[in-house]
Image (cartoon, rainbow, N blue to C red; front, side, top):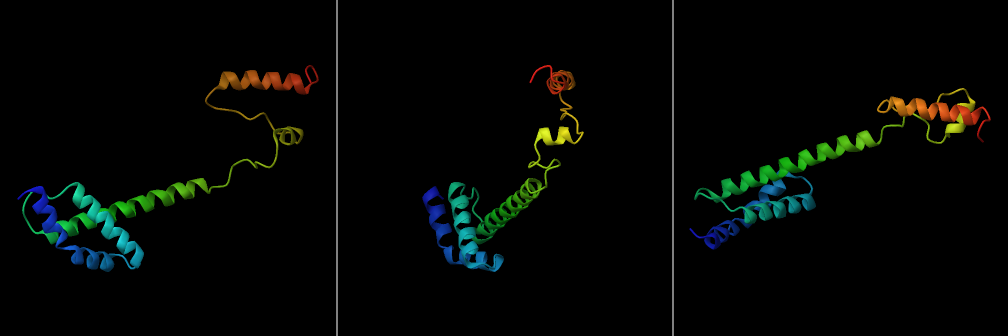
Length: 130
């Protein structure tokens, strides 16, 4: 069967794809999106073997739905990480923290740089360089 015949055979099952999407996704607009994504995937990579077009389309749709859920899960994790409160109050400036007796912020990645910056900062605070 040629590629055009395969696509034509798949399109005959358009009603099946829509009804399956509505049965899997309660929101009508999302069901339409799922059906469209299924068609895009099916037309990009038509089935290689002749078999049940409905079964193949159902598999494509399940894969699309799985990808959606995986994407939602990843997005939720990223949003949760981004919503974590900062460890340091960003509204409080460095000078205010130092005046309260706080220390110079450290970067564990560059300990040599930390000590050099700390020494330079302490000299400026002691009045050597203002």
